[in-house]
Length: 501
Image (cartoon, rainbow, N blue to C red):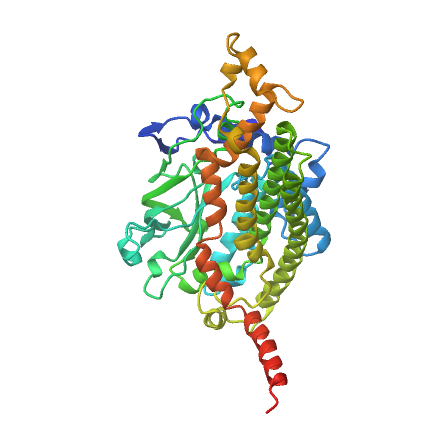
């Protein structure tokens, strides 16, 4: 089908999905007030592809149909293609201010990464690789809104996986596999069309029943979602400009003897393939995440600049220095994203060479890698940016927003107070900003408050911190990079040169 429109996306959500919010079954997610804002945003996302002013920058011809499709599905092999992909993703992320971690681009990049590694998925049975390629084409050409669920819910971190009720294989049938258990955090699941189950933490040799990757429609029988408490509460977008528009929703996915057709299975009881998916991905997902992080960085810089203006602090050297620091981070991010893109290109070519090598053995590479992400044999710019640079910069930028706003972040009346004939004139007299009305000053401060201090802002902080997993584990994994040993050898050489004996 051609590129989806917003109204078609809305219609696709009326599929009888089993979703629970605040203890109640949601019969039609498109009419539930908690999801109206995010559905509007995703519908607007689909409609942007039909804007002739920017459509060409966001699409490429489908290799199957020739119709324009999102370039977030583009398996780039040249720098020209990569630049086109980066440009389209930048447009889409900045349209949503970098605040939507699960904009459809995210999973589009994920399935593109998966399509790039058929030699991994099909190392024992090529049917699984063919399934992944067909699913990538399906999502691309049907313009599917897709989300994922990766993490095993832990009831007790001291217990083994088998005691956690994680998602597992129950049985195999002629029609497909039957699975039961739970996965999280299914961000955007309440308003997605499809759910992709993929790898996260590595599986051990005795955990074959948990080594699964597949995709199913959100409305699949036996699949139930329990959403967390919504942050959107029907307030005005003046008072909650972000919470009411960009709350993507998170959910626990519960599988009760769900039948997954074989053609939608990508990994089944294959610990080697499951564990090697992540280390083999070229990195389109990490690149997408970094582009999204940069878009949010730019939004925070603009917010800080506007706050300084309405508070009369834009001429003060102290605050200019803080905003200048923010701008410097953006310059660094530009360089890191270009480096990430070039690194992904090199990885695509490396994986394609492996796929074409008749002597390639995934089992041998698995033994070399030893564990998921543990010993990278290629550059780590994209993962370093997503694991360390983006989270660290986000915390610093949020800190600057708080320092800039100080008490003005807290003293924010509501829109109703500003429009009340009794209180409005007094508020205008006492809290008007530097060269602006009280209404404008309050609106800016409410935007800042929603960015850093509400439930929405708090979740954003946690999301940025843990997006790429446990930060401590990430540091330990990077410790194993071959570069560290090479740099230590530099020092040892200097010590040898300095020793007169």
